[in-house]
Length: 292
Ligand code: ATP
Ligand code: MG
Image (cartoon, helix red, strand yellow):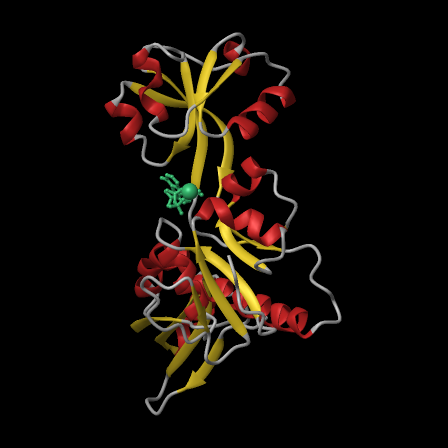
């Protein structure tokens, strides 16, 4: 594949799959102006020295390893399976899934040793092989490229090792989930030879900073409320603030406004306590970026 060498940083993302939407959303949260890309292989970002390459996810680790792309966003499962020689820079908190052993519904499997001498079908032979070696277990790995879950009913394998999210596909095939082999999520990977003194490296560091601030912001919310003056100390104890909350006076006497940045998942745990302590006009707002 021929790619223009315009000196821009090149980031590979999945073209059309489970990681595409979240990858693009994360980059947009970094204030990158990403136009419609439809069937294009490569787009240049108007407001950053960056080109985005759209690829099959299986191709991303190798392209980053070989320097065709400087960076990539891809599942940890794919990086590990290919044993690509790239640096995993950051976990991105989406595309979470589990690579696990699926077993027939009527089998009880609580001990890894029960995998001994079994035939396990998978499209992740390298990850499974490393897992078996680490646990000192001898089993037969049967490599299949798709629809691994039908292998036990066809009599080709005893168990499977596959990506499991809800377990519904397993259930349809009279299988259930057991031992976890790998917890995976999307990661940012980097070519190991990116030269530290280069302009590209500076663009990379700046982009990484923006990604980190976007990730911090995603998990946080801005909480605002009015509180009676005499409830202030109780309310401040309830708020799980990341930094000290801001307390502002209001035109109305004996009433204050309290603002705080809180972990998003805490809101529903504290809202009833805040109301009982006298808080009113409670607002929860999204935050675009947090620079720590
Ligand atoms: P491509 O056409 O790019 O090769 P694909 O079909 O190989 O796509 P997807 O199914 O889009 O890949 O999955 C991409 C990644 O999403 C996986 O490698 C994995 O990291 C992650 N993922 C998250 N949840 C799941 C899930 N429930 N099943 C499979 N993969 C999942
Ligand atoms: Mg793929």
